[in-house]
Length: 118
Image 1 (spheres, rainbow, N blue to C red):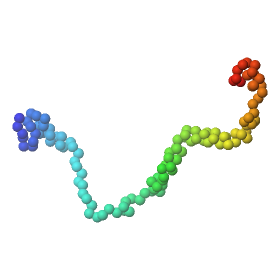
Image 2: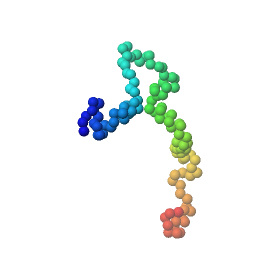
Image 3: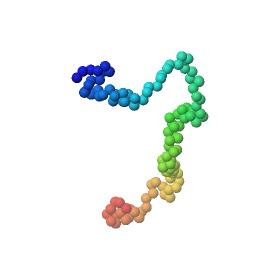
Image 4: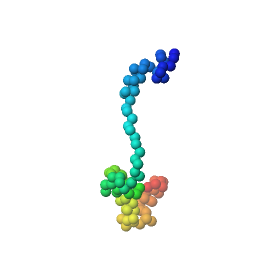
């Protein structure tokens, strides 16, 4: 096996020169790149819309609140939890008896059956 002019080996892994040219033609052509001579001006870049600016300037808390508001089940569950927590503040007012009240009939029933659980 000897090397050819283009570097491919005859009968080896290089393949036929016609196949190599066909593969080279199928590859995408590289784009011409250039470097700008003038310095970069950040103010020259396109301006953000009001909505984009609001998003980029928002705090982490605000972005999480926006995400939570889109999740309807989470909002409903949060509302139910809030109602339950607020009911704790007025539960003593709503209760028909004080916290030390115990009915005698439960004590009598437990004594008659020998059980301490009413």
